Image 1 (spheres, rainbow, N blue to C red):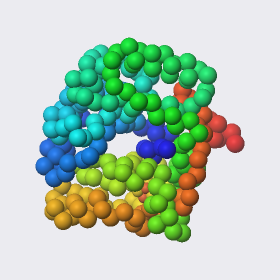
Image 2: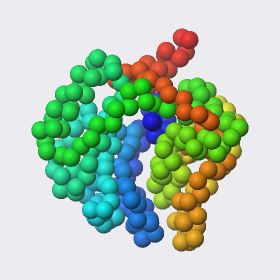
Image 3: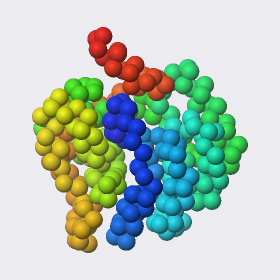
Length: 255
Ligand code: SF4
């Protein structure tokens, strides 16, 4: 399963800690998630990830009946000072996604797992090799939605697992593909297919939402925007995650 953040496109923007604090302040008064995940891109790339872990635990007042996790590829674990202490102090599970069977990648992955084991953090490995789900056609500016003719079926086979709500810019989106689609529009402008327009018009849950709005949003289930995703699960295998976005640009342009 993939989370659909358009990471092929190499976005590098970090969320500012103070912005995140403001968003947490708004939403922690309105909702109490069963599970709270910090994910990226790659969260261990964020220079303030340790502070973010402590702040998340405190501001959401996460209790033992809730799950708190950081989802990472694990490769930078040894390079982030105090990450193990932050995870242990905050009862935060490190979920490590294994992306590929590529030999060079697996060598680095196994080395990271050794370090993580020795650190004493609570971790789990999510083996995604051969288990990635396609959410759109194409690459870069030529991407197109799947354009399913049955959005109920697309929802039943939701590639992000139906519970992938995203907090971004103090609003909550149904899933990552909808939350980050505007990034694609900003990057590619008029080159992006107009087939995306209905999905770019998606309205997320805003900070002024009433209790009724919040309940309606989280229980809505299938909606027409789900037609951007395939009707049936489409499994794909990734190339080595060690390749840079430029590698994919080059390989697509020579096809
Ligand atoms: S648009 Fe609907 S089906 Fe597609 S990822 Fe989002 S919630 Fe799932």
